[in-house]
Image (tube, rainbow, N blue to C red; front, side, top):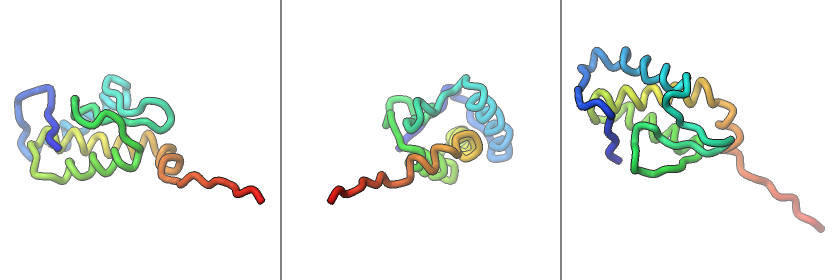
Length: 106
């Protein structure tokens, strides 16, 4: 899945951590939004791609791209998204990954 950033300038690998901190701050402040409702998420860094994810699927997406061979800015943005999901939306990890159990009536 190709993801792009809004800024066309690229970062060196040494700048990834600093850029990830800025992206995390934007996510935490609400400038960039990843969560819509209790169990609906989207990647704010991949416009036009898959628009709705479950928590675990978006976390896997973010982790995968943060460790990929994509441009440094893409890696930094997705590293920040993974951190944001794990830190600020951990409540969704249990609610979206737990299977729904239905009681059988006898």
